Amino acid sequence: MKKCTLILLLVSNCFSGFPQETKPNIGTIEFSSNELSRVIKKDAKIEVLAEGFTFTEGPLWVEKDKMLLFSDVPANTVYKWTEAKGKEVFLKPSGYTGQESRGGFLGSNGLLLDKDGKLLLCQHGDRRIAMMDAPLHAPKTNYVTVAGEYKGKKLNSPNDLLLTAAGDLYFTDPSYGFESGNTDPKKELSYQGVYKMNKAGLVTLLTDSIEQPNGIGIFPGGKSLLISNSADKKNGWYTYDIAANGSLTNGKSFYNVKQEKAPGGCDGLKIDKAGNVFATGPGGLWIFNKTGKLLGKIKLNGIVAANCALTPDGKTIYITASNYLLRVKMQ
Image (cartoon, rainbow, N blue to C red; front, side, top):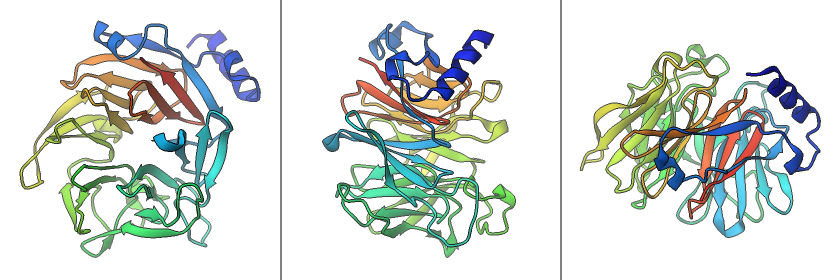
């Protein structure tokens, strides 16, 4: 990174009250294929919508309210962002409701609305997927456990999740919510799993072979699952076929980035209606077509991209990255 870019980044951090349009560019959009121009305009910009967080994650666009909800995991807080009011605290505590003082990634991570419009949260500190027992327009820290155990053992720290049209809830369960990681004495499971919970509440382990399963998505048609592995030596994205009985088969690499030196791991991801993949990874947000061809990147300078959210029309993407909330208006 050039020296002048570093200076600009430091200035932007110091003067966070400046109007949005005066902020320096904190990244660039790299077109690796002309196919990307059908997704993102050549002159698209990376906008800084809000900053000053600890580490942002789990963005969720709520179309009917034109608002974005997202987690600040170490701060144990869910924020709300709207065009009119900017950032506001939405929920605190969001992921750890215990009385014992603790540090680390203890708050909520992935967020999702269920079929009834209720907010689901991946709660690192409480080691469960919980439902906020309150309407979105009047949020309260009243939580009900949706999934908290597998075969009588507490989950590690659910990270990200998705809900299918059939009502199946898929989620990843790495170990990042523990203060001591995989060696934490409170860890009850010997692995990090990917799970499915059906409408009846039955939790099934789909795979325990991914070292740190993180982001998760299903391709259009519902027959192929994409999972990111954020473990240092296995950094990459993997696809699995979803068999008729719901099990995962034919696991294979979608794209391998373990040789990449840029900051950040393979983290949250989203798949649009055309099967294009928007996946946070080393150096920013990577964009692929459904076959795994790299179309380009939203490259970020010196900050770690963690997750993203698409609007239903596919024209806007929101990116949570380090202490920022970013936006790119695409097509």
